[in-house]
Image (spheres, rainbow, N blue to C red):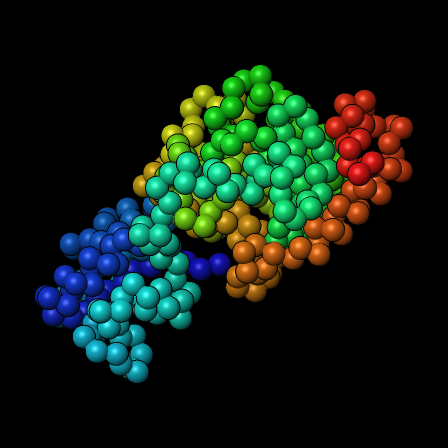
Length: 343
């Protein structure tokens, strides 16, 4: 995985620095500081962000932070680690990619509200059976449905989706949350029976109105299920985030105002990161899992690697299990999967 806890020094003239900082400060995984010392750097890194410090002269004392030094210019240069200040929005991310540094999306790319995308929401279309592409709706309860997930770089990937257009599971009421827990337990049973691995569950909650999310993000709530033996908490901590342990019902009582990442391990321990000052990489749980599996850069990304054919494979494996074991399944699972098996 990329790091987002680096120290980056911009070296240039005052006017170059000022112009460049106007752009660079908009990236979500950076914090601009006016001085470099151990406490400042540690505080920024604690929030999983990169330090950005600018100066007209380089001090050898900076070496202790092992910084990445970028020379600012007003023209395009072929020299390594130089940045044309007039192309900073486009070129700064490319430069950071060469150092495997994650600087996050730029705030100029944010959606302003979930209402912008609700009328064209893919997950709403599936819920209302109006999607142009046929999807495998594997299971349907009163308030939720289950489908294979796009970008299935692992076996058994499915998503639990609320039928109503909400931003995160934290928005539902207690009765609906009880239903969600039943759906979750049903699918743990189904996936563990097929793939013989316990299930890692995760959600990237969008926060109120989906504000602050990238314009291309899907802000309709969806919860991911992944059969895996990955040690969840240690792998998440290794990535630079340090989630807190919560009671499941805390999710609907105390969270949802701000974006959050929810991680539920194979022993049903619920962990969450929800500090609005902390940077959460896009598709972070998928990145963590891909890193654990030893996959290459960007193989986690469902947008660039949708793997639609894998959705058909997963649906077929689930159909086989349900068909062969239908009579022994609980009555509610029979009811909720009947349409899938008879479509």
